[in-house]
Image 1 (cartoon, rainbow, N blue to C red):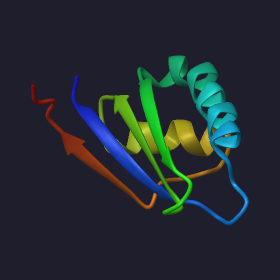
Image 2 (image 1 turned 45 degrees about the vertical axis):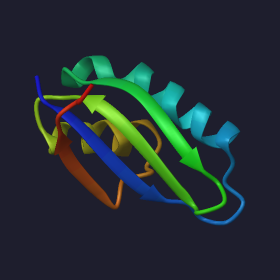
Image 3 (image 1 turned 90 degrees about the vertical axis):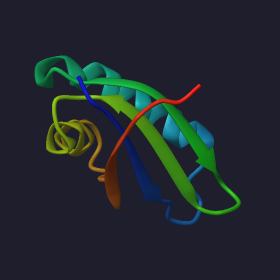
Image 4 (image 1 turned 120 degrees about the horizontal axis):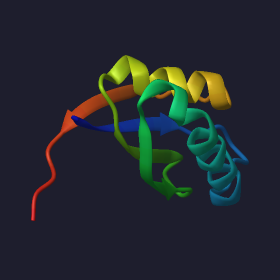
Length: 83
């Protein structure tokens, strides 16, 4: 299955703790969509969040975010993992 990296722009006041809760919600919702949210990274200083997801499509990954918490990404990009 393809890997995707998405990027979110944070609204002021959103913390890594908040994103951790959203990631947990993604993991609870992902099963019905054949999606696996793997990891996330947060740059509070730059107002950005990045999520790595194993999904059949970018739309499937976005659907999980929409269903789980409504924090839809600004962009979703298919990526390949390097060493």
